[in-house]
Image 1 (cartoon, rainbow, N blue to C red):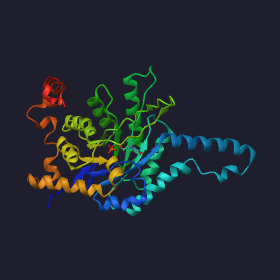
Image 2 (tube, protein in one colour; image 1 turned 135 degrees about the horizontal axis):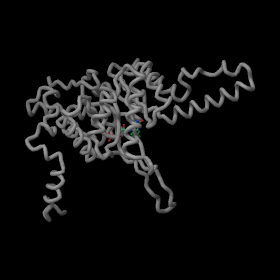
Image 3 (cartoon, helix red, strand yellow; image 1 turned 135 degrees about the vertical axis):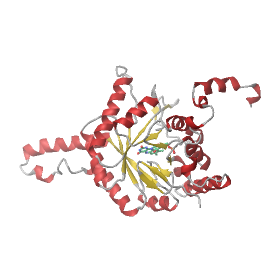
Image 4 (cartoon, helix red, strand yellow; image 1 turned 90 degrees about the vertical axis):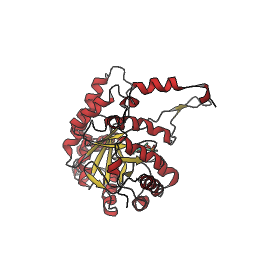
Length: 335
Ligand SMILES: Cc1cc2nc3c(=O)[nH]c(=O)nc-3n(C[C@H](O)[C@H](O)[C@H](O)COP(=O)(O)O)c2cc1C
């Protein structure tokens, strides 16, 4: 029997297929289906810095104003160490997922600035999360902020979250950094046990009828795996932390390519929204078949075998690839 087991963030998973944060993992009715379809782990939807800060603001306002007017008001309010209502739902979701699932449950925190909100990492850990995924989704529009300042802030945040918890920490981020490899190493040194590569950038569109800026949500396609593939292949053997591939994973071929590049796990959201949790089983079957056809006994055997350090010409993952590609275009390519 082909062995699909893998290790991610120090956790033993039965399969490298992980359901990433999104509406499917946020729906308890889907959990058993994800597990039955072979998910190695699930990542719950994020608890956002904004949600926590907003709750803390409301709580602070009530405490200040209520306390002056009604002597007993404070005794009715939850203590600051107790998760307030909105974020409490996330904590409850973790508890519920832990009760219902045998596979690891990863809780997600989403934010960009160090601050009091990172205490929620501990609340999520106390609720039973096996690991925390910290999503650093950011759009930096302030032109006075330098890349160095920004990276410093992210590293500080990772250290703060890490200090709150005794469970593993994964950091999910986008690829838009000038020297991504260097940042990856520093994130690991700051305490990241794994990197989730990559976030998708949700770019707004302009409605030509109303001239309004409209948020658009299009699901990914397989073509979007390439950025993750490129960086995972480059980082494999360079960093010691776990590597998770995310974005554009729709079928068994996508999974295999990312494992060959060096991913420990391969995450998917869009494909589950399109086809339902059972699509994990479809992907798994296709991965198994390919491995059987090529006499691979285990994921460990194939993982990273087409990474930058393991290919005869590592330049295929460097600038030379660009040079070759643009010079390989001929009129025969035109349709
Ligand atoms: C509707 C929707 C909700 C999502 N919610 C979250 C979230 O709460 N936290 C998070 O880190 N990523 C979230 N994501 C991003 C996914 O986890 C994933 O990174 C992204 O969709 C790329 O993977 P895919 O190509 O498999 O869809 C969401 C994606 C979608 C489509």
